[in-house]
Length: 227
Length: 219
Image (cartoon, rainbow over the protein chains, first blue to last red):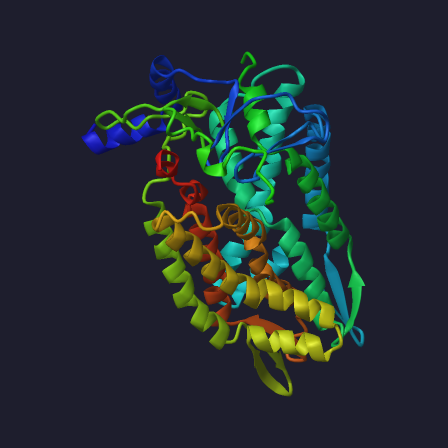
């Protein structure tokens, strides 16, 4: 093996990296550092619904359990179900004096691809389909074992991927975009709403509820547990 | 008599970096600040994310993404984002044209929403990040709390600019009546998506901790 390949393999080896860093570093679980201004605070358990704000910059540093982890699990399962319904059912049907045209998310993305705008199709497919699906699956992956008091397998890559895809998942924007598209085509043809649009509306709410408490609590709880 | 502040002056609050600590950007765990050894970056013991007291080359990367956003902003607004095809001919629509149509069709509320999401937010984001980067570079103490709030605002509203991309994609999938009426995406849409992505990357690259320089405490 050449040096470059070996370096790549080492980069992918999470456990080795972790063992190396664990040996040397002191950690302070009783401290919280503001992500936005680096001010140091001491950790305190928060009451339900209580919001901790940084004394210096005012950023939200934590929320007292809005929804407990088993509640989050239920919401994530619900999100998976409405996600599936939303993807297989028509979002909206247009009726132009007897001629009908039905749109699902997949057809919309495929039509964009076929019209030659491949990058836009990939962008839309990623932010409205692939990333939201990944968000739901990774949430379930982490939360399901947690319900049995276990630590999920490959917890660290899963949580880090979750952080990334959450940022780029845009179901709520897609939802509003669909409403605007409906208004814009209302002059052209009569509009029949499909199950898809209601599923996406429900998905927007469920995802917002699951994500309300942020990831730091989940890190804290999940990494304490035995495998 | 002027009111005296009850809380200590904001600049006198100790930062993690000054105390030899670092909060993980990924999982939030606080650990001891380590000196980077040769070929091995310090990593968080909980999540293995690279620990750095400040994001490396934050301002340079933010500036680069902002420049890209400005460059894409021109074709995004000049080129048409979609074309409506019917037996009467082909009509091309720009972002502003679409807002105008919404306004004329009587749904002025939606026209305002689309205007804010598609025109106002990208410009304000670019301007705000330029301001934040400039003041951070100068280590300015000017209205730090407001600047922190401004950063939070652009992080929250950032991805809503993608709205028009989704409107066109859904219209393309929805209006498919062959030669009677159909909608096709146009080149401006890609440029518009590029603006949104570039501004999102710019705000992700900017390190809000730079708004609060350390040296102030000693001054």
